[in-house]
Image (cartoon, rainbow, N blue to C red; front, side, top):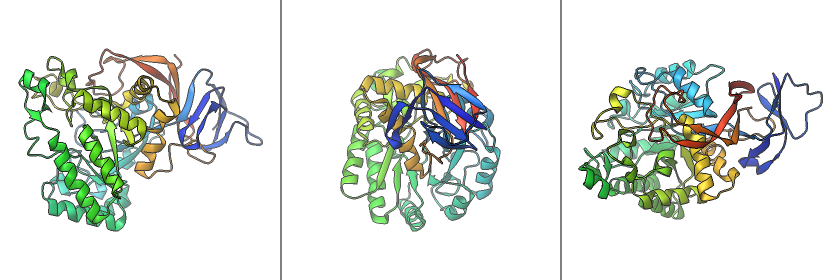
Length: 426
């Protein structure tokens, strides 16, 4: 299939392109930019007048809920949500049931995800068997099966000796380790940021120190072992300050933030809205603002959806009893555009955080539209809008604190390996 995308505003952050240029695709690859290759005859022409043409989006955290949690979501439903959101590549955490701690499970997931209209799936393997924090997994075998990194999802490794050995082993093979920083004891039974809102609502709090104490351990062990460390979903200004200082001291550490923590604070819990029950918890307004600035400046390396579909039975409960998590695959682009507009950022810089910068963390040759690159493309209307409703979300999970909001941007086409996987003519 040869496709000519014409008259669009082509934005490729990795190549520094932001101009009206035509894009030519052939045999699943980018065949040319601006000028058609010799003898190019398109099978299809997409008129992108008034639209932005950019690399397919890359999401660093999207739970697909398979295997084990099909009652919350299925691979088919979440992949439909991904392409509807312009997401062409995603990393899935290992907290499935059973966890992704055996090569056979990873291979099964990769096999099921081999569908022309499914985004490319990059599993994060379990760092310890059963995510129990006691015994190391066979990381080399998991890597051969398709894992791009190793982590614990939300679950801690409380035995620091086990964590150090895991980092040492990973460093030996140059495997990245992805960890979320939250001390399980300081955060035990907590459901909200330890602040005025939690006190007023009578909710058990999780202090910022639960994040910073855990992060201090992670960073010190990373320094000692030389492992490539990625800190997932940071939530506080103090954590970001620690990561900046660690980099200055020579530790190779990257970090990301979720779209929820980029836009919301603990004030958005409102009157016990269970959709705002998240891990990590929504922090204070100043914390949120620090993360927004950090992402704009690049000290926060990437933005992710932290997509976590939850069934209604588990969400429609009192706040403290509701299962944590929010759906986000379809909101990654709109919430990125909203942040960019509010921060008055160039669109190319904002898109970099969900394309080329995210690809760099994953170690992928993706998030770019250079000739010869995979033809994974997102085409969206920057002047369009998305009304977030249960009906508009293709994800099986309808749980998001943004329900009812009008968000900027509408995906019109998503192309995977040079074919149209999603199309919305409106």
